Length: 316
Image 1 (spheres, rainbow, N blue to C red):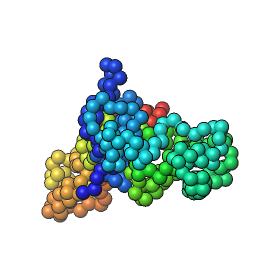
Image 2 (image 1 turned 180 degrees about the vertical axis):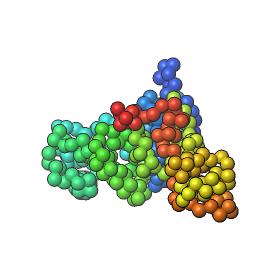
Image 3 (image 1 turned 135 degrees about the vertical axis):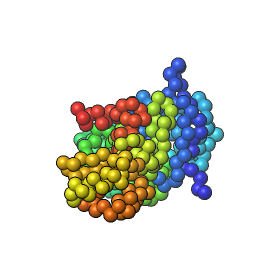
Image 4 (image 1 turned 90 degrees about the vertical axis):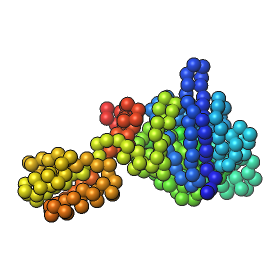
């Protein structure tokens, strides 16, 4: 068994009488993306700040990249990178100078720092604007530079706190490709996001945080199966087949006008096979079958009682 890239047990944090984290547990495997979802104020950023040594926890224990958060904070800092909600880019420096500054902070030799900066500028398609200040960059370009600065130190673990907030869809998908490339090369990423599609696309595992507590954790598919509303929709060639299917599947709901039958299911292969086996036993022909499962927005709504701010923005 490999050592977890991030492991936390019973992390707690309060500010005055306000409990921000109420004993959360995390276990993140190396070379994976772990997404932390939650509404504004749920404690996501506080969790990231604790795990990246920016603030201390009031209780609990944690290790990052195999190093104890309290006993070896310098070793933790040497192993991680952090891209926060707000850009760390210096607008008075050029893109290249921002990267060279980070190289100096990581105590890289001058030649190595320049090599690393050039490599990252090329990797993030920023070479053409390397000599200009970020004030002239688009939002997507600034975010790429911000992430490139995080990578100067070649971190094992990267914390991305809502890295695509405010980006247009094209820039967001470019960032997703960058994240996938990092993970393919062995980097571990803990991602906080308001975009449920982002978690669905990127995360190997997802945890939902609400009012400082983890209310659910698992893969995207596992979380979706926890929410009621999944169903199969079966379409039949005629009313005779529809009626025979209704008799075979008594928990179903039929629609004679469309010749369809709706059957509740958790969306698993086992459940699907059971339905088809029952229809085969009755020699009922099926024209088509569609599986409908809840999405992460349904999961989030079910677990927290409301939708994410990003979803509300898209609906407005």
